[in-house]
Length: 132
Image 1 (cartoon, rainbow, N blue to C red):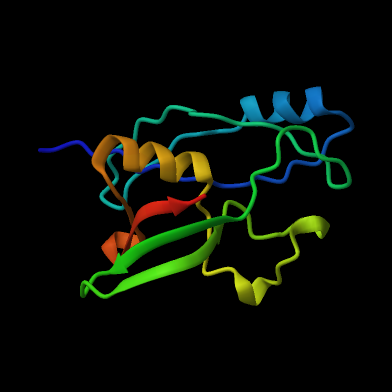
Image 2: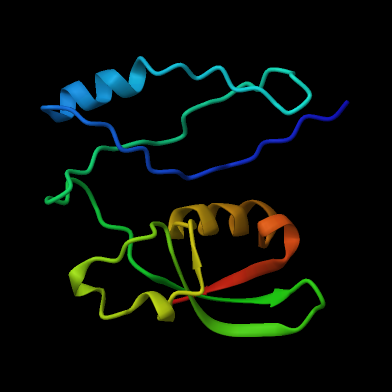
């Protein structure tokens, strides 16, 4: 049997009185992940951070412009992707401008550095480069 790593970026809202309490509650969550066949999944936290609803805590992940191709080979250029499903006030984009949510620039860069491309949504499309 082969082992595969599936990288997922997800935001989890936790009600708390402080960042420390939020991180404590996050750390104490039950992370018993199971596949549909009942087998256990092993996990490693790659990165996490806390963001207040009204305050930016760390570096903001900007909208990223990418080039790539569809699974039929047709190429696309200049599509916009964003790590989160909510845009900051200063982004100058609307929801209609964003092609895909859920990919950070860092994730795309890492995938391209390791494999030369970033396959998305089961290979429905592949990001081949970032437009700087």
